[in-house]
Image (cartoon, rainbow, N blue to C red; front, side, top):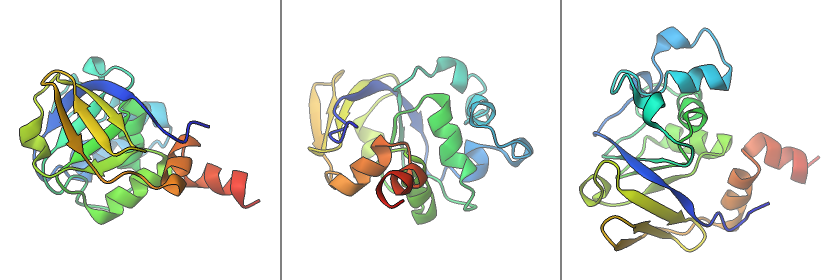
Amino acid sequence: MNLNLVNLKGKVFKCPDNVDTDIIIPAKYLNRSDEEYLGQHCLESLDENFCKKVSKGDVIVAGKNFGCGSSREHAPVAIKASGISCVIAESFARIFFRNAINIGLPVVELKNASKLFNMSDEVEINLAEGIIKNLTKNAIHKIQPFPEFLRKIISVNGLVNFARENLL
């Protein structure tokens, strides 16, 4: 188990303010729940080739209110299944934030995130130390470090697995 979650590393995909759960995964795809299928349709209304462009480990950088809309857990599942390793946003809808952690997708808030990163910038994130490095711009940004219990939840791929390993 990698509790440090050091070196989440990938390229940036930018999203605007107010990306709601219907934009993340349109309702027409909710008739199936397998993760791979959901990941193949992630953010296609913003960029129909999003899933073809994503490499495992890439990062979404968004503006304000990311994940607003419904409380469906399918949205963070689709993001994670697409290969995205972390979402950095100026702010999140609270239910999306919690759902993301519950399924093991790291999400971090960073003031002015949408202005600090460009599309395809290379970034490296250390959740334990609370550091985001924009390797392209040679800039370092501080975030609130993730507490150990949240790193444990993420490292075992979500709250259900954490409960199985630690409570049963």
